[in-house]
Image 1 (cartoon, rainbow, N blue to C red):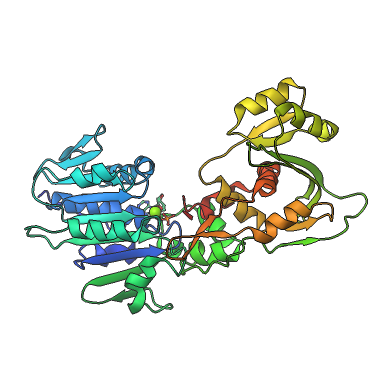
Image 2 (cartoon, protein in one colour):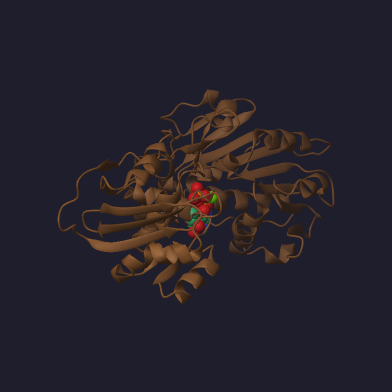
Length: 414
Ligand SMILES: Nc1ncnc2c1ncn2[C@@H]1O[C@H](COP(=O)(O)OP(=O)(O)OP(=O)(O)O)[C@@H](O)[C@H]1O
Ligand SMILES: [Mg+2]
């Protein structure tokens, strides 16, 4: 094995004792930007040169490339070790030139690949489940079984994640040894390290500030403080119904969620006061079975108020409305945009005109999803959300970009 001297500061202090952690089950959890992923990628690179074979998994294969794969390559470069590795970009493997040990990557949504993956030499010694709260208990059990066979190395299963919800299976499985005010716990088989952004001296001042200024109490607990989150089942409580003042203050916004055969399409006219963080919802339309022609007729009276923000997933409908002379524009719909939108909306004061019973019903009923064990997931249930979607689209341009960073549990996936 090549002699590697880690320069004093290249690994955050909190993690240094764990470079050589030999526990079977290792848990690295805590707030966003705390250096978990970078540390584990770095350790994995060093371990490979020592002969360990690591499989890195996430729930969704497609997210691996932009996350763990990049982190591992960055770690190789940061340590100046590129010449010690053969990197295959086609099958996403790194192979140590000194001993043939490998780092392999797979998504749990690709069951065939997971089953067939084996290192070129020896057995798997390590599995790292990144963003493990996205993963099912059954997958964890399967991976645990994969870690067997003769090797001079202790087999290890490492989990990293943000503590999205206290009724998660990870909490039930491992956290009986945990005390909330401590940052470390261990038993003979299990080690648990909690870190936050304060443990990461490499974090940019902007990211640090965004975490410190987080307004949403749930996100502050989970992503800033790194504490286990408790999700109330109802998503929005920050709204009320009230007769609106005349004139309604703020700037006009319009949002539209397209309907399909069974789903209604939802439209909102509202005003937004940026300084006061106040949303005044003035009018709603919620109608089923409309053709785009019908829709155009319905929206025509609002055309003078400004451009209508629509779901970008329906370019054809947008095109049709445009050709019918309606001012509409698409808004971004990334995988995280729903969560970010919700996070932002929860920090506003929402006042509904009594003329908006549809939105009132949606807000009252809008809840987080639960998994099959009944645990609350940081994802909204995908139903009765037509006007809520229209609300997000209408205000998309007003949402604070910095928030997007802290809230992204890329599939909160939380
Ligand atoms: N040892 C390091 N050397 C250089 N930069 C680092 C190091 N550790 C962390 N960083 C920087 O801090 C950022 C956040 O770290 P990292 O992504 O590991 O946090 P995390 O705990 O995995 O966060 P999240 O919970 O959001 O996934 C990294 O993108 C990187 O820029
Ligand atoms: Mg991470």
